[in-house]
Amino acid sequence: FRYWQIAPLDADARVLIPFNQGNPAVIEQLIGKGRVVTFATPISDPARPAGRQTWNELPTGENAWPYFVLVNELMRYLVESDAARLNYTTGEIAALGQQPQRDPEIYQLFTPNAEPQEIAARGDRLSIRFTENPGAYRLKGNRGGPVVRGFSVNLPPETTELRRVESTRLDEVLGEDRYQFARDRDQIELSVGEARAGREFYPTLLVLLAGALAMEQLLANRFYRRAE
Image (cartoon, rainbow, N blue to C red; front, side, top):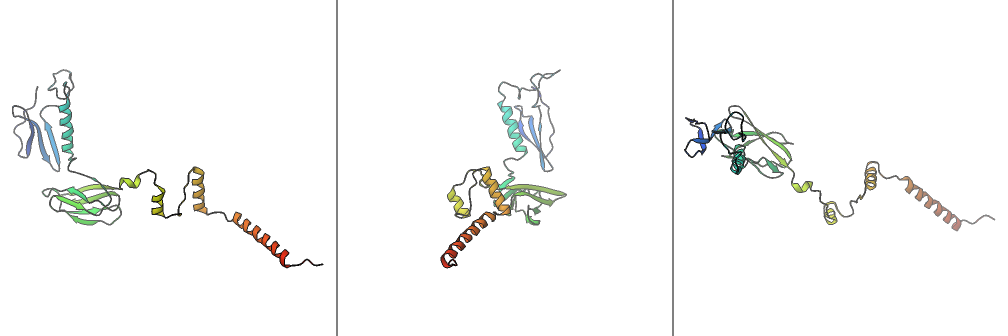
């Protein structure tokens, strides 16, 4: 197996994984706000590279599971998946990691439906309590240049649940006899049409007129005698 000998290392670089001989195999260095990881041997060689011998069998060996674990955990480490949570539900306190030596202390918070407001970090934590509205929240600060961060706030899962609700729950929320069920498309179209244009009064008016005419005839026959 072959590898590059990387020496000397910068003062801000550190060895994450050494070879058996002690030489660096995986090196990490912080650059700006990011992390850079360097491998001293390739991790993408095919089993039979053209014109040369393979440097290692890490991705192509019979037992390649260490390669999968190494790459998977390294990617999680680089994106800080365990440290950075960027999705919250409404009403939940958003807590973002803060590095005082490189991050601004004061931010402007831009919420979905409100004016920008100023918030301050405390130590290694930036807490935002104003998460009543769903949407994208943006943080803007300055420390040797603009610093932009953000997170998302979503509705609780139960608000978009499509499971049928029991009638007792509807009575509790809407009030008894204050709603009606539409069980097919025709009923839906009828309900929507009535909500937009109202019900036609003409059929009811005809019934009332017929009733008034019948009542008038009945009273006329009872109280007025026919002239002889």
